[in-house]
Every structure is written in structure tokens, then in C-alpha cells.
Image (cartoon, rainbow, N blue to C red):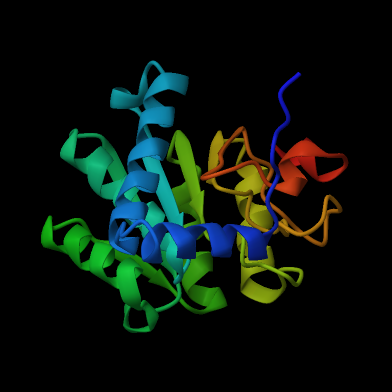
Length: 208
């Protein structure tokens, strides 16, 4: 039986570095490819994707950047998309910033969620969607979610709406198969590059 390589967060960063520096693939291209793979997976999993209302929950980092790409690609297919950024647009940097600006260039609004009361105002909108894309955190998380992020994760889990997570369900750590704290219960996880430890072993793998 062929072996499967499972990568930690550090190993995944090194693989990305080698792809960028040794193979000459720009990091922006990697992000575009990641978003394209996720959008394709959505279409393969949900036959009625064209008629769904999709909420994309984005963090400020690269996982959120992947989410911006997904939102743009879905919007370009005339799929109803709402984008929620946990944080402020002014805090988004690098490739994620580039993809945020591309999204805004299409005229698609991005709702900023920086405080508890802002989430309280917009959380009811989530239940009016029929699919959620979780692009809050990828492989970089090492500590349990708390505060506003914990509230958001709990509220998403309570909606009963199908959730597709990008790379990892937000709240899991790529470096352990244990559940380190509150995390998204994903219907489907589209992992990128290689499988991650919590996607393969109990108890964390039960969150997808």
C-alpha cells in the first residue's frame, strides 16, 4: 500500500517556501490555485451550488485570502455570495490584501466584524444562507480560539448550515490530532498541498 505523507504546520510552510523559491511559483499564484481548488470542490459536492446562498467567513491571513478567491470565483459565476471579514480591511496584508482588493473591485461588499456587537448584528444573516465557507484559520493556529472567535465558531455550528472548511476546520491545530479548543464542525474540508494530522486521526478528525 502506498504511503501518505502527513504534514505539520512547519513542514507545510517549508513546502510552500520551496515551491515559491526553488520552483519559482509566486505565492499569489498558490493562493489563486487554492481558491480554485476549493471552488471546484464546492461544485463537485453540491449539485445545486448555483442556487445556494453562500457565506464566506474570512480571517485576516492567508486562509482568509483563499476565501476571498473563492468568493470572487463564485460571484463571477453569478452565485449569491456574502463575505464576512473577522477584523478590519486595513489589517489585511500581502497576497490576502491583493485578493481582497480584487474582490472589492467586482463591487462585492465585505462586512467587517471587529467587535462583539457587530457580530450580534450580522450573525442572524448566517442562518439565511444555505452554505458557509470557513476561511478563518488554516494551519497557523496554535492556541485555542477565545472571545469573539469562539462565539463565531459556536454560532456557525449551531446554524445547522453545511460548512466547507479551507485546509482545516478553524480551531484545529495542524500539529496535533487533539482538539485544542472550540472548532468548526465541517461538513467537508478541502485540504491543500497534503493531508494534515488532525484530518487523519481521532479525535480531531471527527470535526469534518
